[in-house]
Image (tube, rainbow, N blue to C red; front, side):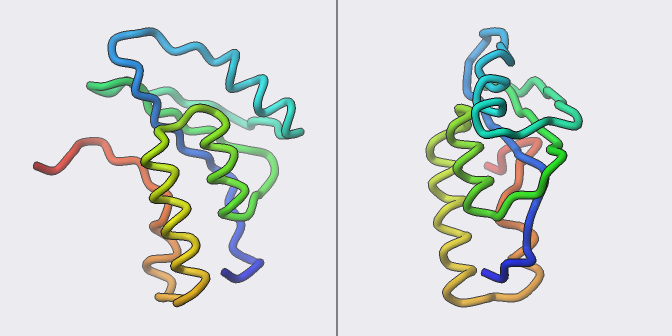
Length: 110
């Protein structure tokens, strides 16, 4: 993947059921990584929470996937994100797919 593609928004998908979210563990990961959030948005979903973390520093896609995984995001989601960025690096499918490897969906299609 091109080095100039860097992002500054982390998307987390936390499947906690009906439990309340605790941001303290996320703050610990951010502090350990030397990252500062500009803003954090939490959105309740049917099965847990979606969290958007706007960072003050840009990260490479692989760094962003690692951060999201360390913050507790859904393992399957982050595995698929990693698969997509590795495929983009190998095949370079174009700007449409480069912009859509790390998304959160508001609902599931059935």
